[in-house]
Image (cartoon, rainbow, N blue to C red; front, side):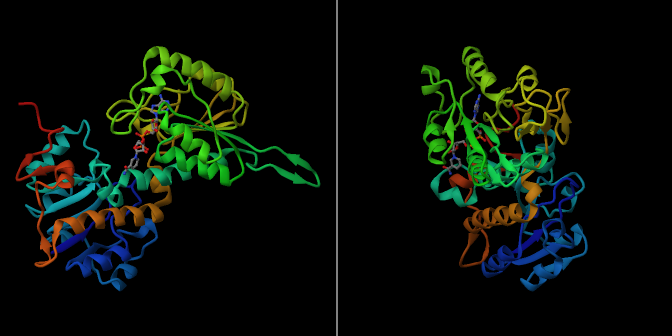
Length: 379
Ligand code: NAD
């Protein structure tokens, strides 16, 4: 079983799909690992460390892919890479498949089996493979660090000889994996933290982290969680009540971090221009949903926007990539855990069980066709 680890061709992607720790595990599993030269450079892993772990270094993607049975990547393979991947090989990555009909067709036409890690079901067996959680957790942490760095004051209350400095007020909107880590991080840094979500289950989670819960707790709120644990899109009436409540609260905040998402829908608009206008000069908003349309009015992907009243709106993209070393090692472990389920321990070869629920949930293309129910072209 030959395993190729490619350098990411997208310059905006500093993460890498394998680290020396997982290379050793793949070798123990019976794999020959070939890493494209420089693949780990931006994540702090030099080629020599992969070699020390037992991998071969290939000068080019073409050389790394030669004879590969399994290809590990962070992002979906691009048009430049597809022709170099051997037909029949399995490719595992974060595929970002929604609305990408042409890209999915190109992968199918290349005759490869592709697996989207972000479609992994959130069941107990697959927790160790959950890239959405491993990466969102880091994004939540980093959002607080980024917000603090843009904020011209300190976060904790300080009593000094020169006088007392008040603690910063941080408001977290959306309390999923990223939001919970943002609350924990903001608390560790000494801020006074409040948080909101539309799912009732989050109230207790917020309070258990020592933050205060702020939300419109009406009848609709009590029903706002789907059986899958995700948020529903709220009615216009609820959104109006929520906006009223948030409006008064946000004017008193120093840093606001938004993480609200609804699966398969654009991110809900939570912070309006009017609310931003009510904030103090020097306050900071960090929009983690900016790549999905944004929670904050005026947020721009990849930019820090300063408004007329000197409020900064931080719209960094690929926030987990801003912690490339940690994000890569967690992502690499998620990948290893999945690959382990695809390998036959006796023959030490890839033996994908096509009816396994993890395979069914993640497999996008196979034998020249798009096979995933959610992405099959309409007949
Ligand atoms: P997500 O990234 O889809 O959304 C982030 C948060 O935004 C969610 O908490 C959501 O309720 C909230 N939100 C949506 N609309 C909002 C609005 N209008 N106002 C305020 N907040 C809004 O969420 P996630 O981090 O993927 O977590 C979703 C669920 O999955 C949670 O219940 C979480 O506990 C669960 N989960 C389960 C597992 C597992 O079982 N393996 C792993 C991770 C997460």
